[in-house]
Every structure is written in structure tokens, then in C-alpha cells.
Length: 343
Ligand code: 2P0
Image 1 (cartoon, protein in one colour):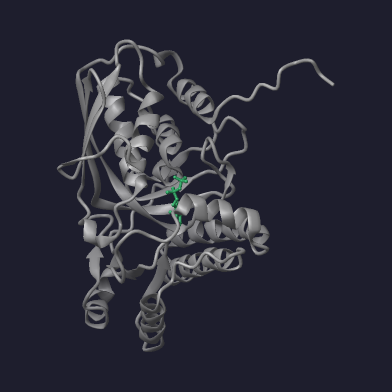
Image 2 (spheres, rainbow, N blue to C red; image 1 turned 180 degrees about the horizontal axis):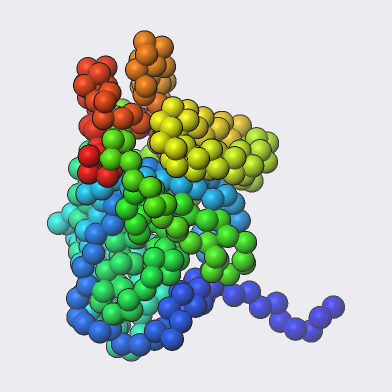
């Protein structure tokens, strides 16, 4: 038996090391100013991130790609202070709440003698009722606001690493448009970064259908872990996602809307299939979810090019093009249409 103590580096220490590595020689330098402000968009994945190869560094099993939602996202201001103080949508956020703790632990990565405390004021530009406010835009906006406060001038890859240390999907919210998050291979996550795709697709539309609001039964972080650990279908997921991502890359390059919609919808169904097979099942779908998917299928059978995707929740997102906007509005009067490229 070895007489060496069994040293286990904590998740927080590993995240701090990863943040320092992304910052390089900027790590530990005092802030350049007393305040930083930034905005980051929410994003909808066309090929989903589902499962981690490293829980602590939020490193994914598979690469994913999303569309950022333009002006819908999170606006954040971070100021230096003696202690921490958080405001979310105009109301103080209790430091001992789950969200407060998560925020404090994240800010610990950047704390130092010249930056002992952070006052964070954050506001979602997505109506809360839209059920879309997410950790993705929150941590991306915070990473960008810290970049301004400290004057780091980080490139997109480094920013996406910092955002990822808060929440995986936040890696994709550091940029507009189509953003791929490469899974990477290195154990320190230094190659698990966001790479925006150069293509723009101004006619693309996303329709937000809010079918149910309120807290979800299981958070996506726990659902993901439980699926990886217990679902017999999970083994097929990484390769399915790899193929879907390549199909989507081709669809975006050639502006093939049908291939994009079909693949995104199939990818979302496959992700939910892995959850349904988990033991016990993780089932986010409600009766309204199934009814909405039926309506999408019926609209498509009538010749309307509209597809659906859904994340770790009951709400359905529609994918369509500007030419179908009137018909989609008629078929789904409750949908809120978003033009991710500004139309
Ligand atoms: C995605 N989701 O690609 C997938 C699809 C939900 C379903 O990324 O644990 O909040 O913070 O890394 O990013 C939601 O998971 O999880 C998510 P953590 P995150 O958008």
C-alpha cells in the first residue's frame, strides 16, 4: 500500500486552475476598472449537449451547436464591492439560495486581494414567463462582464471556457448566430471551446411556445447525470449527436432548411429517448407537449415546413423560415417568433 495520502483536488480547485489557465498571465491581476457591463443571448441547441465526461469542469460527452436568440438573453453589470450582493430582475437574490450559492462559487474563481467582493446586477431580457431564462445567457453575460471589469480582453475561446465553468450551455452563449461547442479531448478542457460558424441565415425563425411554466421536476444537471449513469440508450447518444452535428453543418452551409429542421427535431427526440430510458425515467413532457408535437406533425403533413425542438423542459420551440411566418402564426397563434439574425 502506498504511504502517500490520498489527495483529491476539489472541483472548485480544478475549476480555479482551469480559469487561471484560460486567463494565462492575466490571472491574479487587479481589475482595470470598478464596473463591467455585458449582454449575452440565450441559445437554442439544434444538436443538444447531453451528458458530461467531467462533471467538475462541465466537459461534455459530445459536441453541440446552437442558435443564439439575438436580443433575448441576459444583461449583467458587475461592480467591485467589499462583499457580494446580487440582484436578479430588480429583486435581491438571497446568498444562501441555490442560485446565490452557485453565483458565489463561480465568483470565487476570480476573487483576490484587489477584488474581494462583487456586486452583480443581472436582468433577463427574456420575459420570465417565456420559460427560457437560463443559466446559459446568465453565465455567458457574467463572464463577459468580468472580462470588461478586469480588462482582460479575452478572445472568444477563452471567454467560452470561463462561461462553461459556470454552466455547460453558457459556452455557446458568448457569441451570436450559430455556435458550435467542441467537446474537446483534453482532460483540462482547454480545447472544449465555442467556435462560431460564419454563416448567417436571416430568414430563419424560432417560435417559442410556452406550454407550462414553473420550476421543473428535475434540473438538467441532475437529469443529465442520471441519464448517463442509468440509461441503456445513452451509449448510442454520442455517435448520434456526432452525425447530427455534421448533417447540421452541411445543412447550414447549403441553406437546406428541411435537413436542418428534420435533424434538429430528430436530435431532440433522441435526447429525450435517452432520458425516458433512464431508471427511473426522466420525463419532462406533459400532455401539452405531446399535443404541440402533434400539431407540428399535422402542420407539416399539410405542407408547412415547420419543425420542433425541445430542451430539458416541457416547452416546444418551432423552427421555420420567414416565408412561413404567416402560416405558422395562423397554426400556432400563441407562438412568439424570434428572428435570431435580426430578420
Ligand atoms: C442544450 N441543455 O444543449 C441542452 C439540451 C438542456 C437540454 O445544456 O450542468 O444548464 O450547467 O452544464 O448547460 C442544459 O444544461 O447544464 C442544457 P450544466 P446546462 O442546451
